[in-house]
Amino acid sequence: MTGQAVVIVGAGTAGHHVAGRLRDNGFEGSVTLIGAEPHLPYHRPPLSKAYLAGATPRERLGLRSPEYYVDHAVTTRVGVSVEAIDREGRRIALDDGTAVGYDCLVLAPGASPRQIDLPGRDLRGVVELRTCDDADRLREHLHEGRRVVVVGGGFIGLEVAAAARKRGASVTVLEAMPALMTRALSGTTARLLADTHASYGVRISCTTSVVELVGEDGQVSEVVTSSGERLPADAVVLGVGVVPNTSLAADAGLTTGDGVVVDDRLRTADPAVFAVGDCASFPDGRGAQLRLESVQNAVDQAHYVADRICSDSDAGPYRAVPYFWTDQYDTKLQIVGYTRHDDHTVVRGGSERHSVFRFADGELAAVESINDPSTHLAVRRILAGGGTVSIDQATGDTDLRALARSV
Image (cartoon, rainbow, N blue to C red):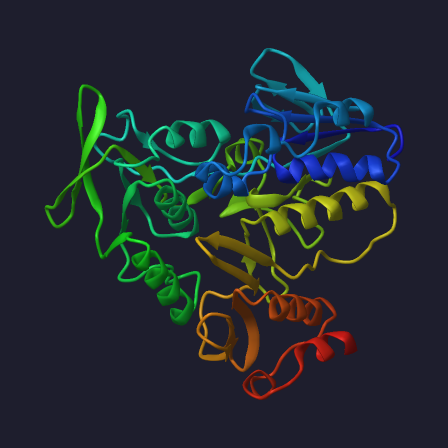
């Protein structure tokens, strides 16, 4: 596509890496990166971890310096939103009244916090953590003597809870399900995280939802739960998940569901339009569509699409081994693979450092490693090389690093 125009909608991790990879590949056409936030691309994982805890300064969040985009001839349009896609004319309309033409369009708008209909959600001190500006507002409340209520016991909610405790705030986590992380983790790992938070003084209340947020002079002051309990609160974090940003694609007539639907080359039904990152619903290779929210997924899909744009040859379907990590206190959880259920688990290691091997129908589906990076990296290499780990190998004393070297 030498000499043609690529437009990327979404200036997050995926969008940034599409632009960078195009230039690394020697792409000579124009590259335009458009983002609704008034910031150049930045790292989002620290927002609920080190940045929120005060360990990472704002200036270290940027994925690249402003000069990088100038030096690599990437036109950045930040602080503007895309209002519509004209697929026939291959143009996008922006909310500042301008339009940008494209030969190839990459959709990378990410996801947005799931909205819940909750009385009092517009009070000051109620935060949905998605952007660096959200994190700045929340940090004002994270210090000694402050009371923080986290609604939702998922990864973001628990990371926020850990950061808040590190800064001295008291924390209560409310989870509507009977236990934390029931759809994302094995019972073994979910219980370990719950016990870890409890040991740091976090109160966790499961099978509990919120019915109202009460305020004084426009500032949140209490959380009323489904049991009738009234929890004092100086800040409330709504962390009940995210939904993919699909409205732009849907309005343009592209197929959407739990994400913008793409084929195994990450292309939509329109051959000129790709979708990557948190917004993309792609074939998982086992007959189902999958949407992942992780840095690895954003980067790998971005690189794959940029390589496709720059090459006339078909490199085959997108196949990448998913992995994810989270830091909470002194606990580092790393996950490789993906599953919503298992029918057999094997735990290798001790209480402080171990890995949980999750099997479904006799096949390895995912491995959750607690402070066990060597096992995580070995399994990643095994799966990436097309290998696997059997139940017998996981149960026995198989040298996983040697197995990884053999694939």
